Image (tube, rainbow, N blue to C red):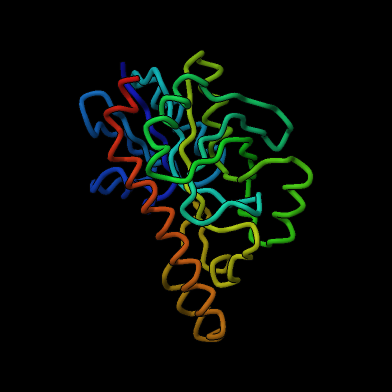
Length: 234
């Protein structure tokens, strides 16, 4: 049995390993865990999932952060999605017994939500857009990769679960500085960020707040990572 874990961004990768990977790298972090750094977005995620399968993974995990759509979700809350909804309204289900096993492991340690996780091919930065998606889909949260990973798993007839920690709450619009500093892989380029902040210093408090939210999400993922042995041996 080999578990394949897909992460999109280096900051999410660091909750699982200290290894520095380039986009597209696939490494073994233990005897039966393969890990790949996909880059952001559904196309990169599907490519990464297929790579893991070709390397022998027979179970897949989508790992990382998500944006809240449900107003009750807070930064650091854990989402173990039951269903995934693509932008094309395709529906995919995660493996119920495996997900329940994970829920039982973590229930005493973290606030956990189930429900639907929606897909977006781009970052949804505005809180009004988040509220619209919540009303439209009923999804509790949103990310860019999980649906594509589940699609690859379904095609290969492999089980898949989603482990996502909330970074930005539904009521928060991302600071414009973030959108201006993102590159094509969804990563913030520090030089662009600093240049934008020099001319928009009033955005600094919101950026600090977002940083604290992201810290809470990474802390949750690090907590889950402590249970990887139990998770993968289900």
